Length: 324
Length: 279
Image 1 (cartoon, rainbow over the protein chains, first blue to last red):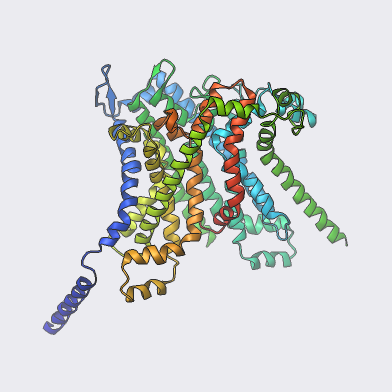
Image 2 (spheres, rainbow over the protein chains, first blue to last red):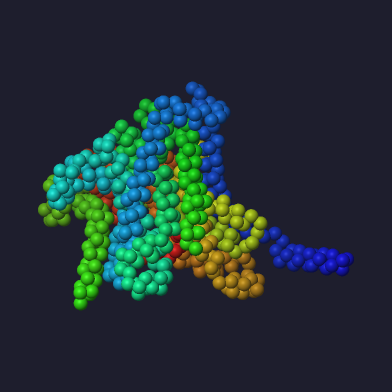
């Protein structure tokens, strides 16, 4: 017993002395970690927490801030002057996201499936060209489409006329009923490259023998895709969906570039990002309201966090089980 | 025979679909580039025609260069992007190395803390960032943009780089340690050079959103002498909306450098996207 204790003590002492001799305190770890942690904490984490804190304050007429509890949130959700725009923006944002999910992902999957077909020629050229719009600034893309869809220029109309559909053309970006759908489709057009590339990568990672086995059994390329490949790339589709969700509920640039801060016509293209900007900065005669803006930003944070949590704890877990 | 014909037909159909979608993806960009060197009359008369000696004109570019400080905007974007990119890669690689190489208490907690920023957009803290910028007297400077973009780029960079560094062979580092080489030298002269291929990929992922961003320049740096290209174009077009030559020329000026860089590095970028680094 005593010998055992002594042995333990000796071993312990030996270990500490070795550690002490080699490195007294691992300062290099601190030096390696400090710059990134510092910049990230000061310019990303702290401002986010500070915004949340600010959302619990309100300013009086003189501009002095005082603690107001959750009153900003109550106002936002119940006061008709605020609740109308808020629910409108949230609803529009949901439509914006659902259009992305319904159009962007299927097109992305289809393009990836075609690109990953065996013995496809010009694969590299297609990939490069198809991904080009994704590289450009949303602002540039917004203006480019504004020109093309402009009835003044007539390019859009001319193209529809060439395929005999000129009667379909309308000022889509200017009409209340079509502006949001048009903007969503412009965004889909630009970002379809991301699901395409990620799913293409996932398809390339599928072991050849799985596909070969199916082909030997007489399956067509179509059947191979639906029965073998698609189930295997579902986790990537899940990851693409959450990326889309976060991007969509944080979007701003496209709407602002094409429709301005007022997200017209009649707020029909207003989403959370533009509502946040208007509230925070003000527009025309309306003064900016930082504390109310902070409340909207915090709600956006909660919306995004909820989506991310659902993804990590429900969707991803279920998919991993499915994969096994 | 019939099977082969079916296969050829199938391949033709695949190329048909891919070509059709490629046209959809490229046409809007192309039509802007083509019309940027045409006269106003030709832009409206026949938008789809390529420029001829009669319709060739650079008046749009002349307007842009005369009425805006485009070269300053371009320089600003370049300075901000390169500085932030350098800091993201340097600080990101250092942190990734610490997280992937050393075992210390709080290691995984630290990794999670830094990874939160991958999913939670930095824009949500904009009000806090603006208050911080005014407190530090950094509003309307390129410095604040560099700092914010560094903070924005770090989470993904640290994540991707530490995944990569975990796979580096142990022998190299251990051999250096036996020779008594300091941890700093191991990092800077052994690890960093080995990380170069993935640094390029991470660099491209970091650079694109910074160059293209409208939000932070709009909020933090509106002044003419610190304005970036994306904001500059947005403001210019807002002002000259009826001058189609100028609008199309300004869009072309914004598209060309990115397009050139992309075509130059597309192999690298696509390899990065498809290598499984991002999942």
